[in-house]
Amino acid sequence: MATNEERLAASAQWLRANKDKSGTPEFQRVAEVYKQLRTGQVATQAAPGSDPQIADTSQQGESSLMEQIGRGAQGLAGNFAGGAVEALLTLPGAVNDLALMGVDKVGQQFGAKPLTPEQYANNPFGSQNVKNMFEAYVSPDIFGPKPTNKAEEYARRIGEFVGPGAALAPAKLIAPVVTAGVTGGIGSQAAQDAFPDNPWAPVVGGLLGGIAPSAVSAVRSARVPTGGMTQETARLAQDMIDEGIDLFPGQVGTKPAKIVYDAVSKVPFTGNANRARQLRQFNSAVARTFGEQADAITPQVMSRARERIGGMFNNVFERNNIFADQKLLDDLADVQLRATTNLTDAQANDVGKAIASIMTETNKGGGVLNGRKYHAFTSKGGALQNLTSSADPNIKYYAGQVREAMDDAFARFAAPEDVAMLNDAKRQYRAMKVVQDLVPKAADGNISPALLLQKVMTNDKNMAYTGGGKLGKLAQGGQQFLKEIPGSQTPERQLLYTALGTGGAAVLAPQVIAPAATVWGGSKIIKSLLESKKLGARMVAGALRRAGGNARKFDPRVMAAQSAQGSVPGSVGVAGRGQSLERPALLPAPQ
Image (cartoon, rainbow, N blue to C red):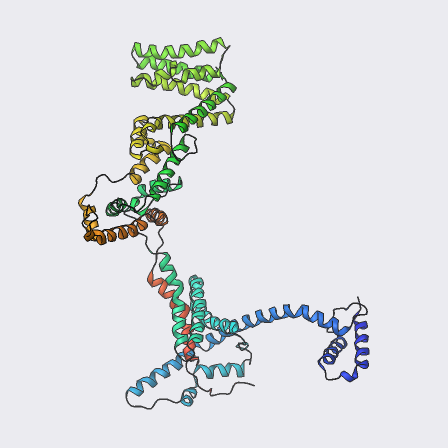
C-alpha cells in the first residue's frame, strides 16, 4: 500500500502533467486530494501504481454512505433538540402572543381596528423577539439547524412538543407525557402538511395527536361483558379453556344470552360446526384423563385403554416386590389393633383375615411379597379389594388402612419411575371405570356432559371435598357450559323469532318466505357473535381479573391530564411562535 508521502508526490506529478485540465471537475478533485495530503488530513492509502484521483474517488464513495447516514442522524437529532429548546425558552413569549391575540379579538368586538403584523411584531415580550434575543446574546446556533427535509421537519416538531411537556411534567408522568408529546408532534406536522393554508391545522392536529395514546388506552381498557360470572365459575371456565375446549359467549354469558344462543342454534341451516368441534374437544379432554388420544370415545378406544393400562400394572409389578420391613409390620399391627378395639368381632375378623392372608404369602417368600401377588390382592376379586369395596363403611375404612400400608411399603422399595407409572395407571384406571358405562349411550362417541357428572359423583363420594380431580372438573364444566337448555319453542324463543321477523311459521308458504329468511339471516349473525371463541376467552379472562382486583382501570382524569401535559404546551408554542400567525420579527435575526 502506498504511503501518504507517495500519494502526495503522485498527486503533484499528475497535476503538473495535466495543467491543461485546470478548472475541470477531475482536476479539482485531484487538487483537493493534494491539498488534504499537504495539510495531513488524509490518512488512507491507495494501491501502488493506482491513479490517486481514482483511489480517492473510490474511498469517497465508500465513506459517502456512512457520512450521509451520520449527517442524517445528526440533522434529526439537531432539529429535535433545537425544537425542544426553542419551544421551552420561547413558551412564555408564545403565551404572551396568544394573550395579545385575544385582546385584539375582544377589541374588535367593540369596534377597534385589528392589529397589524407590525404591531404584533412590536410586542417586546413576544416569542419571536425572545427567540431573536437568545440568538443575538447567547448563540446563533442555540436553536439548532434549520430543517432541510421532511424527516427533519417532523423531528423538529416532535421536539417542540416533547421539550416543554417533559420539562413541566412530574417525574412519575414523564413516560406518558413524552409519548403524548411524540404523537402530538407527529399529528401537528401531519395536519400542517395536509392543510397548509389553514393556520390552526397544526394546533388542532397536535391536540388530537396528544389524545391518541389515551384513546388507545381507553379502548384497551374497555370492560368486556363477563356475564356476571363469579370467580369460581370463571375459574372453572378457564380450566375448560386450558384443556383445549373453546367456550362461547352464549355459554358463559348471562341467562338471556344463553337462551338467545340456544334459540338461534335451533334455527335450521344455521350450522353446527362450532358445536361439533367443541364436543370433539370435550371428548378429547375426557379421553386424556385415561391416557388416550381420541376425539370420540368409542368401544375401540376403551378396549385400547384397558389393554394399555393393564400392561402398565403388569410391567410395574413384574419388576418390583414388597419387603416386610419393620415399618410395614408395625403399620399392619396397628391397623389390626384398632380394628379389634373399635369393631365388632365379625368386622374385626374380616379385617384380620385379610392381613393374615397377606402375611402368609409374605412368609412364603421369605419376608418378600411378590409384586404379582400384591396386585392379585388389590385387583378386582382379590381379598383386599373385596373389603375396600364392602358395603360396610367400617370394614371398608380399615381395609383401606391396610391397602395404604401396603402401598406405602411398595413405594419405599420400588424404583421412583415405577412408583410414578403405578400412580398414573391407577389414576387412568379410575377415570376409565367412570367413563365405561357411558360409552354405550354415547352417540358417535360423544360423551354426555350431564351423564358424566352423575357418574363422577357416584364413583367419588369425596367429590364435595376433592372436586373429583381433572375428570371432575371436566364433568362440572360440561354440565355448566356445554349442556343444552332443555325444551323447544319456549316463550323466550318465540319472542326472539317474532322480533327477527316471523312468528315461527311451520310451513314455507309464499307469504312467510321473506320473514323466514329474515329469521335465518338474523339468527346467523347473532349466532356468529355468540360463538366467538375469542370473545368467550376474553370474557373469562376479564371475569378472573375483576375477581382478583386486577382489572385494567381507565381513569379519564389521569389520561386527560397526561394528554394535556404532553400536547397543550407544544400546541400553544406552535400557535404563538408564528407557525399559525406569520409576522415579521422586531429584531433582525443574527447574521
